[in-house]
Length: 607
Ligand code: ATP
Image (cartoon, rainbow, N blue to C red; front, side):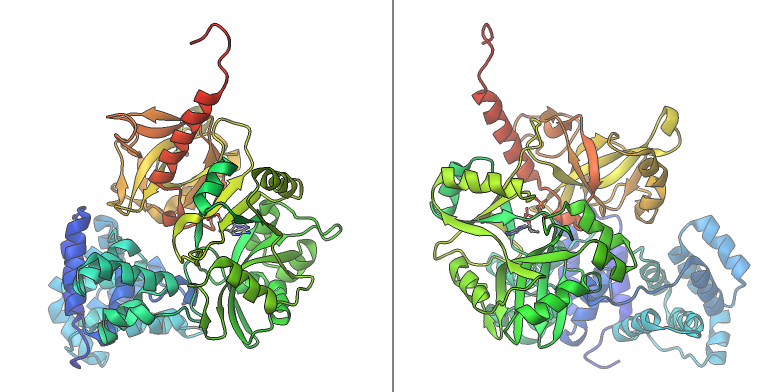
């Protein structure tokens, strides 16, 4: 092993120690220890493995593509067993990882014969060998790819110690399930490389500017934490988007943003972060997936419209009525995500990009500049065309003028307005939801003035017509302080029969046999899920409930905040679990709702 490499056994042992630990502090300590021991050359690989990935999602690294059958074959090949025997063991133990571990323990003598036969050795597994083999498996294409995947995986297993075999198999299956979110990895890196909260802030800021945890870890490990201070966004690497707070009262919003603001249409489409490098265009979604293939028309539009050689700009991609040029609803745009025939969809559902920000121009980092400066730079490099225009806006400090603009926005098919600070500190705060941007959305004509986006963490079997089917979901809000999900409500209405029929298949990949360590719940669901899928729901009002853990004790001791009569609206596949409505936001919504009820004139005769 090169001194710059590391034994995979160290990782496997750490993963094993993590099993069963639900304390985030303990998990962080274990991880920090691991990262401290990791040589700089391979720290990116180690970080990706902890994330259960081969790289950040936006890189579009192919799936490993090892199905159940291939896995059984690889285990059989590695340990000189028949596929039937391995399958029987898998059925019995329910975990192919455990099967490989057991066979590695007991099949040592057989293994060594096979090793010689297949050209293997009794070499020890390094992180690089394991990671590079995973890459080889992922990138294997063409006719012989199945064979190549099989041999590469079997080769790894042959050389693996029992504990290593367990985690190699689980990784390949996508079932590591360590219960570790990005926030915990950031904590662990900070502990490993300094420990102060200033170091934590620096690392988080760096991650917000370059959404690649492996790369950030590598910079820290090779150049030290100080190197992060001068870090700039980079064209080609997505930056985590700046987000908005919400409020309902224009005067209150103006006070928050500093009296005067830019008020822009809040378009109801898909956020696009567009990177231009010469003629090369990449479009990243709000979740930083590469969505360029879905919007070739927008890519063409940007190539022509943006006059800088290199740039990162942001805007909302909206479906446009091909006949009238009017804005169309979000649902129409989402059809592009589902359809394969992009050429046809481009004609049926044309789109337009409404630009609202710029992050980089050539090598100039604009995130530290105030919004008016950024907007000027953006306007100066833009030659609008049919596909790409600036967002509609006014600069105002007058609540009446803003309300009129808001009503116009809604009449024009927008969702409301974004009210943005324009003072000297109105920088672009990557990855942060704050009061520099405030959204004012239209009312949904109910006491609950806005929908919320909650993560499905479990489910209950239905009754009657829905008997035997997953009919009710347990939904949770995100608590970023503890990096956990806390339950808010059960939702069973708003689903169509088709939704219900498809529910099991939809959730099958995320079913686990115990409550996920990042889920805090008082209820015992029939089925638990990994917190992955986000649902948009609305209800009649927010209520207090002792059954749910979100905002527990915050308003009243022993009660959390819940939703009365919740109704499912749609899946928000454009959001990750950490993008769900937060506990704090629900608390704010609850307080605003109370205020609204108090302000309502009471009918005569009532106190
Ligand atoms: P929502 O659930 O309300 O769509 P969100 O949680 O996806 O919001 P927010 O930060 O709360 O994200 O709202 C801002 C979103 O509004 C942006 O992510 C962007 O997609 C969209 N948007 C539309 N028009 C604008 C605009 N002019 N400026 C900024 N964001 C805009």
